[in-house]
Length: 318
Image 1 (cartoon, rainbow, N blue to C red):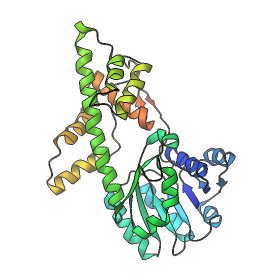
Image 2 (image 1 turned 90 degrees about the horizontal axis):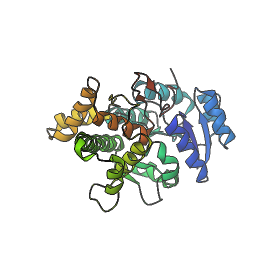
Image 3 (image 1 turned 135 degrees about the vertical axis):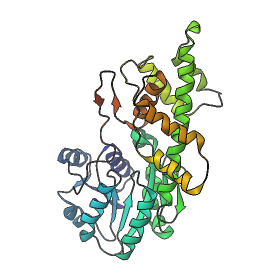
Image 4 (image 1 turned 90 degrees about the vertical axis):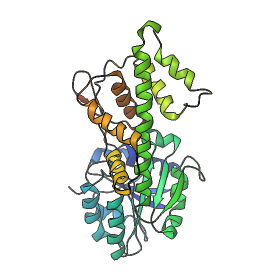
């Protein structure tokens, strides 16, 4: 396939790279000229504007948008639409509110442009491990994009699936992130409890390594805890400050709207809020885990934010 990738942060750039590794032709654009040049040196077709990007793709075009959720997505779509034609497809792979994705699907269909929302998980590891993708939109359009999904996923038949109409991909990803909050909170609290049992002098790195094999709580998140604890057993360099991307809030809001109780996920979100006023090992491990899987920024013990790099690229049409 021929695909235009817009937004070359950690996620967008690596999606472009994995597509190229799979044999697809990729054209790229970002406000950051250095990011464009870097992908150009790796084989991507570079563009100087959204109009230029559009001119370098054959119809029907596929534009893969990887910019921050919210207004940046809408402004990018608004700027791109004059350079699109009927039959083109906009793929939006960021962490958007599924309600906004439903709206965008309706609005773009009125212009004859298809919209596909892709809830994307995998973080900085996705380039080599592949991405889990939860895909929403018209089924026939998703089927047309199958060659791209099969390359981006861990395997052609694993790690991605069609979820349903527009908005469903981002809805499932929202719930995915809510579950992630709860899992991370449980690990963080358990390790904090073990650390407090000072008379045992537990080596938490060894504990995590032991749980990796045969244990019912083994997981990729646990593997990342092993990484974090091997790099810094006491996480001294981190502040106990855990940001949230908004997806947990969306999940809790939905639980209220649907009257479905989510006590663990709701409590884990509240714990992140609490972390910004307290200092504990549990919050440090939460922060370390977010950095391990997503390259998210962390707050150091000195009070500075250590940037993990933009996940979805700059605001394209600011």
